[in-house]
Length: 92
Image (tube, rainbow, N blue to C red):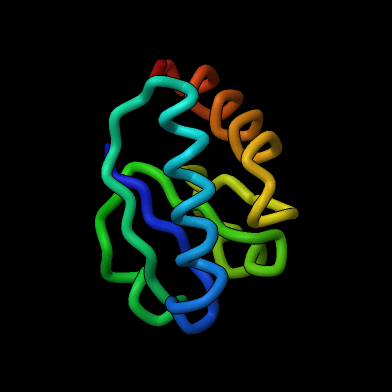
């Protein structure tokens, strides 16, 4: 599974979110690769799942493979939302 975390510039919050997603996926026992990108670059990328913040919801309104996180350092919140998504899509 390929996951991309996204923020405005691709260097700050997306990197922090990448580390949070990595911790959450390890706790869930799901193998994946995680990359972090900016909003401009993500449009050309192929991935199974995008993880970003609520602030970017409007940018992904037409996509179903997106999980939105409120607190990018909250592993518990991230784990719960990822687990819900993965179970809903039969990925775990």
